[in-house]
Length: 174
Image (cartoon, rainbow, N blue to C red; front, side, top):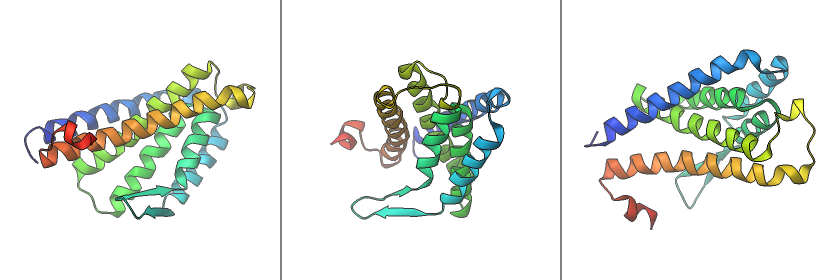
């Protein structure tokens, strides 16, 4: 790994591990354990169904729908752990090394954790299994969740690509 890439990757991996540990600690107080386990199972099961986007090196999976739904219904902890598990499975299938596996898990978990927390901060409500909120009250918080999830996940990866290719962040933004 070039110059600053290795410390960056390790730093992101450590932050991701801390978020996973925090989510594991919060899990026992999460309501409806059988229901959120069902959503986690569906997310992981559908993780293998992906759609490639031809114009860029990216894919979209059906599992994102279950991750976001899990976050809205049950809170950040089960959604964060679901995305971590799914990312680990995908990375293991692709035979990624330990550092890449840890980095991949960290980027998705940090994005989901931060996005979920942003949703509940903006909405000012507990998870939807514990509250009733009109749909119109959820639109802005949902946009916040998806924006934070996408920008944080993609941004962390873009920085790593920039460090690996020694490209400046300004050049990558163009």
